[in-house]
Image (cartoon, rainbow, N blue to C red; front, top):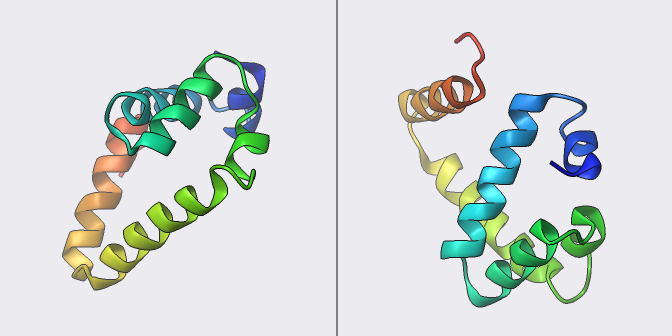
Length: 94
């Protein structure tokens, strides 16, 4: 696990593991640009620099905007279920 990913996760090994898994998922199933970005980061490129670069920043911003729009439309119970699933994946109490 890269020191930067662990730093981004504020030293939380569980969160760093999930972040790495997320990057692996993007590398396999994302859009062309996000696959490329995730592979670069997994190969050692800086996540911070890559995510804020003009090459990938717009793509990441659009993906987040899409998520946020869907999240805001979710019912409170749907948000609670998503939150519980995230906590379970991180090994945190609900």
